[in-house]
Length: 304
Image (cartoon, rainbow, N blue to C red; front, top):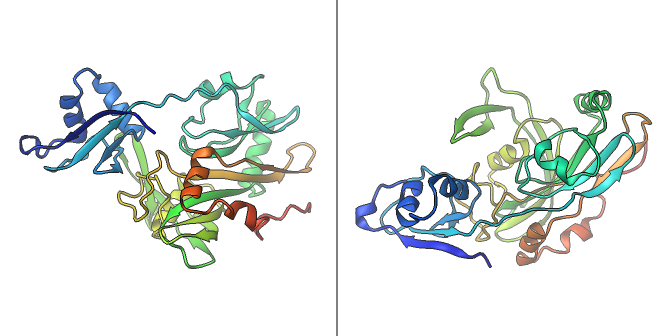
């Protein structure tokens, strides 16, 4: 259970205060920078709902809780595949795709092959040199890299499968975060996501998603547009029907499949599901869903 640092209810004299200003008033022994970081990293709730924007306006009667920072220092990354050219690891959530962060967790020097959002866990490719990196980039551009994600989303998805074909554009920057959305503006780029419902609960559903294009925040934007935002994704949803409140968005890069940039041999890497994700599945009685569905029609492993 998370340790509570501060719990306070907004009184009449505090009406209209921002979340950060109220916390600063309540937690005078904690620096402003630390308070903002706690909000940014989803360690603060308002009326039981995670609030990740420090400028969020509070109302009289709101109950604000600040939790203790949960430091996370993995000693190494789990290796899913390795040879002299490539390394595929299972990135934990809450680690940025930045070699300054990831290199100390690797035994040898590698270059980052692509990126995952900080809160997204799962399979991440590294390459040995710039020559291999260029070959990998070409594979991505030619759509030879197949990616499959698990997403635990809000509400019950009744349709078995579908495809979202809606262009995405950057809408704005808010508190240092870029916000994307479905758009028809000239700068919007086509984005296509296929999905399949593996299991649904009355308040949440587990989806297997395959992005056919590689736009920033694509799966997160598309699922929010569909009316089923990813649980914990407070950037693209403010309110959730499901009562589970994870400390990060529950998106996991589950499977990567692509031809080796040198040998052209088919590589398939599968990243095991992290404990926080499994804990939410257990709470929703969906723990058997991953084992049950086996290989979907989106995940055939035969070589070409």
